[in-house]
Image (cartoon, rainbow, N blue to C red; front, side, top):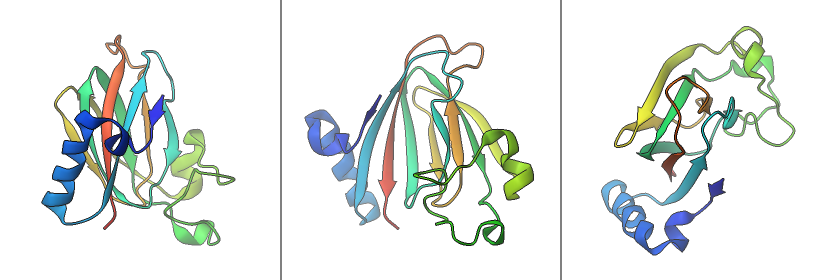
Length: 144
């Protein structure tokens, strides 16, 4: 379940969103993601147009972050919106067909944070062994 712009609609999250603005002097959008355990793909591979700071607030979530796809492989694709709309970034051929390399594979636990730069593909799941509870994380999308 995705709660887009949660920082603008959930009063207890508004303070965190405003603190991010104060710290960065940049606009941001705070989204909240709630994922049940056992999801093989909770977010398919995609890129974002903004830098993303992830804060795991409850449970655990497995993350993989890749280097940006080689632009010449699909020059018409928007590097900041890969894996969205009609663009497909299939995980099974991501490295071979798009020239991306796995840069980070980690499992975030409550209290952990992760920074994902704009245009860096990432994917998440809760299917890893030991991920038996609902995962909740916040993302601060910072427009840099």
